[in-house]
Length: 104
Image (tube, rainbow, N blue to C red; front, top):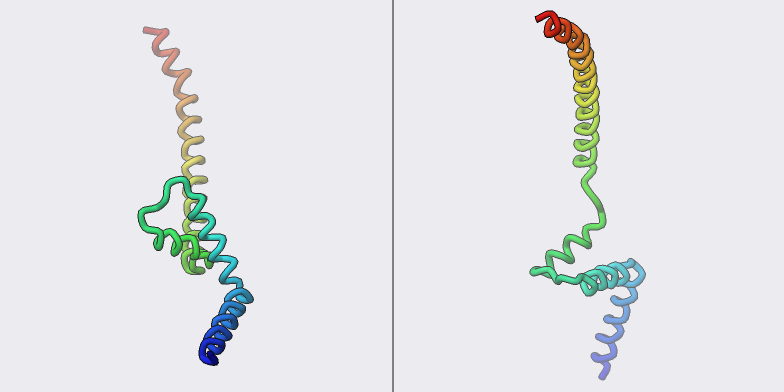
């Protein structure tokens, strides 16, 4: 009987530890999300792993993405400038083309 109480006590301690650390709350929330999924995923374990990955992306990934965004914004600005220049050239050539057509 004593070993039963000791095991029960250890279990209760562990449960309190998980509760204090927020593990039970997070697990409950993820399980509720899985329960409320209209179409259950084929692999529930992968679903749990994906939803438990609350730490977010790695700092290196974030930095690489920020650098890529900066580069793409620069490229976009360059392309917009080029587009504006080409449009201006096109508009400058349109009156010439119209007068040549009218002369023929």
